[in-house]
Amino acid sequence: MKIRFERTGGFAGISTSVLLDTDTMPQNESEQLSAMCNNMNFFSLPSKPDTKSGAADLFRYKITVESKDGKHTVETTDLSVTPGLENFVNYLSDKAQKK
Amino acid sequence: MLCIVPPHLLREIISRGDPAMKKWAINTITLSEQVRMTRQVFVADKIMSVLQQKERRIYDAKNKTTLPGKLVRMEGDASNGDPAADEAYNGAGWTYDLYKDVYGRNSVDDKGMKLDSTVHYSEKYDNAFWNGNQMVYGDGDGKIFDRFTKAIDVIGHELTHGVTQYTAKLEYQDQSGALNEHISDVFGSIVKQYSMKQNAKQADWLIGQGLFTPKIHGVALRSMKAPGTAYDDPLIGKDPQPGTMQDYNDTTEDNGGVHINSGIPNRAFYLIASDIGGYSWEKAGKIWYKTLDLLNVNSNFEDMASCTLEAAGILFGSGSEQESVKKGWDGVGVPVKK
Image (tube, rainbow over the protein chains, first blue to last red):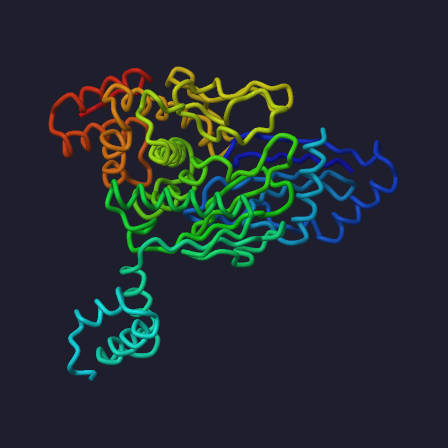
């Protein structure tokens, strides 16, 4: 499974990204990641976020997951992210920062 | 009693009386107007909010993402000892005062809207935002960014997103979005200059100075005076802001580069404020504030240039101020049409 994460926007406008491949990471981490994707039903999440008028400087997150089940991209923001997706976004943000 | 006290006197009591008197007067005014229950609340809220002065509330999200979080400080309360809460409180105060004292605006909505801020949002969160109702600040990751309340212009910037939301309503996409960002940078910088009593020459014209940790090679997030020069670091790259139309960045990222292309009008404002001279909140700031009435949701850079020229004419006639406005936009390659 391949995961591409991009964070754009925000007050600073500094974008960050990371590309993960479960084939090349430690097994426990790869299992944890696969479980996270399954638990939140990533492949059935809506592709585009609800936009709230008036809001500004939000981070915009774009996550693409590619596996044997297919390929799906989800875009979300700080205000439209759901709790399950939020854990995933935090995990990926952390990876992108440590890159 | 209901029939004897005239409404204007009740309003005076609402604005000047002690809490018990206020409550009584609001009850009286709503009863005497014989409105239904739901409308009573509405009327009371409206009267209260129009008459209120600066009304700040600071919340602590305690590193979660639920807004607004726990209320930790209200208007007039002593400091709770948290630097982030103090900075959010003081910065919102300076911003309110600038809008009230210089531009005659009563808070974000011009109706005395309460200024709510949440600090310690999420974990290692490298951002600050306006959610449509309130300001939200992260603590930074500690490696690249320190806490976002450290720079007073960030606070002025976020509150100004609220002002734009209630005035020009610039759509947060492409050039209108870059103008939305630009207007927040302008008044953010003006709040800083106002709080430090600096004129256009003394000001640093930086946005987010002090937000980077000492490990990062950079002075700030943006420079209105010299866009593209604020930072250059192996970890985060180089400041991508253009300072002229020639270098306009046609991108789909960041809502069409709203935090990137804002460098162009930012530099125009710097040039104009410097050319006019003195305190930038006095003339250049007033021109930009007036311009908010003239713009519309889809305005682009050329519209902005002609609206600022028009605003300068309305406020100061066809004199040196209009000349400064023309020169400034010429300087960044945006044509000024009448």
